[in-house]
Image 1 (cartoon, chains in turn green, yellow):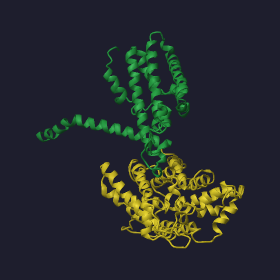
Image 2 (cartoon, one colour):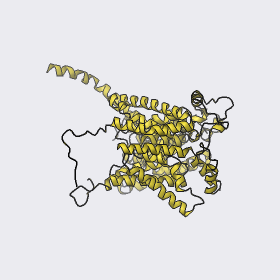
Image 3 (cartoon, rainbow over the protein chains, first blue to last red):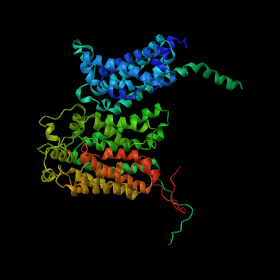
Image 4 (cartoon, chains in turn blue, yellow):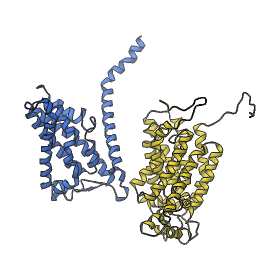
Length: 231
Length: 349
């Protein structure tokens, strides 16, 4: 399968086969962490990095891994990558590391990571695998950030609160206050809010797809009445 | 046994949805009137806001779903939903509380599930719980709306308070609002006072305003009796729910009467009576078999007391109803009545 088109990979990862909206994989961190934009961004970047690096590594060693043992080996690869990222975040983004807590090491168990390693990297060259990891990771990350924006906006009335956890001290005053204290919709930052927000995002995607599909079939539909009257 | 002979033009049972809903509205009138008399115009404002928001939301959803507008709006189910929800809301709350709650109830809990008859959860209670969880502070603004000098807010003053939070000069918000009995008792118990002290300090004042729950409960009981008489609801759910409340609170009370309120207290405070006759009996979301109704109602009663006593919210009727709504398919499955002529009922496959 050396004839992979990079454009196709991007469309698959970001839209058609989006991990968050279509495959619905990695729900646990997506529901738990997406209550603020900064948390979402932090976890999204960690996940993207994990996916790119582990896809690349798995693809590089794919000729020496026997099919019988491939899953344990791939899990080991992913786990090593996540451990490195975790230690790095503990050293340089300590507060965010504590906010993300258990969900950082749990990236190992995120189905989308092992799904791409097993489903794509195990049978494709290194470069497309890296690219696929990036696009799938971006697809996951974008949904995560979109959820973060919706939930933080409704639940806390702010955007980019605590940005210094991710971007350093200069970001301390990046917080944008949108809603007054009284109108905070607490349900949005609780688990039900996450499910509802994700459901709305999925519905929006489906609506867009449907609209596009009807637009593509429009000329055919226009023909039908004529055909009916002709008969 | 003798049967009264009846010939062909048999009296037709007119139990259309519209008629049922109108009867329910009629039955809620005494309770609503008492609520307005004791708690002020805020109750009426809540109802007006909720009903108009509910009608607009229903019409919008119907047109989005391309469904016929007239039968769904005309059956009055939205008005009943909004009315029940409005009666649960604090009378001194801001205007967006009933509007937001009703829109959420109609759009998410009713129409997204497929409209009347398809909703899994009682929409009014979903709206209430969403408001309670999301806006805990505005949801505590209960009070007789009568200040210490005894003057109540008139209608226009209530409207001004609801929409802009402006009170007439000389009236303070703290003078208007009081903790509800359930809130009060919870507060007292968490600070270590005994239940005896807590309920004493509540009712010994003897003022009508302090015990408005009693009058409300009696008015709703009258409404419930009317519904029973008209055959709109059957006795199973209300009786079982009240029995559940009494049994569970009686058990806790006998176990430790220093820290648990008496069964009577649980019966007349909060939404026990209102919930038993008007909320739990929702024909769509309640159990439909006779035995199932008994289990359903009893479960609500027991859960209500458990949530009141050990949960983190003062009243538990709404949560109990939603939890038992979840169990309804299971209850219905295992409580199919015996078919005449058969030995034992088989669950529907």
